[in-house]
Image 1: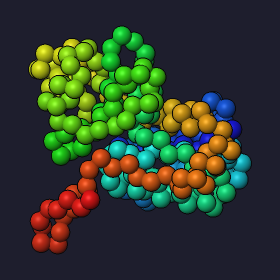
Image 2 (image 1 turned 180 degrees about the horizontal axis):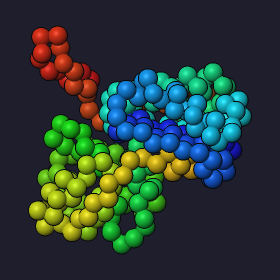
Image 3 (image 1 turned 60 degrees about the horizontal axis):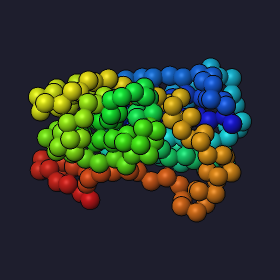
Length: 228
């Protein structure tokens, strides 16, 4: 199985081509303007991997939670490639990728993404398998209550602030800054076969954005409004 995997949901973008669990080429870029930079980045990674786009078996993309614009850019590109190449599309929650990047241990693994609105998009790996936890939105205070004082490893973007808040609440928390790894994303998608993903797409439709709240927009008069 040859998988093209990419993430735009958190910050910047990451892209990789993975064949049977082995990374052939990858790229990570910071900054915005993913809409303009993603397709050229994909072309670069395919060229470095020496993989023709028609030889791809599967497209894998993060579906959120994360940046509204980033999630939409990634999904739009993934949908277009999947339809154009006639290959199935695997949509994986961003928090599942982050949890799968954490090292198994005695600490509770927590994926967290700064919403930039005073709270966090989180998932807790209570099953200790890195991929089954459902994401949710919570303030640092509510999150501290939710994990009930258990020692934890917080992995994600901007998580030093969350870990500090948890420590202040009396919780033994350590932070690991990370963005979603496209190789891990590809490997998570590889848990299902190409035929299984194709059947899933036919039954459920192509992946949709995973949002945990309405979208905050700025109106022409400068007022802010949340759109569900």
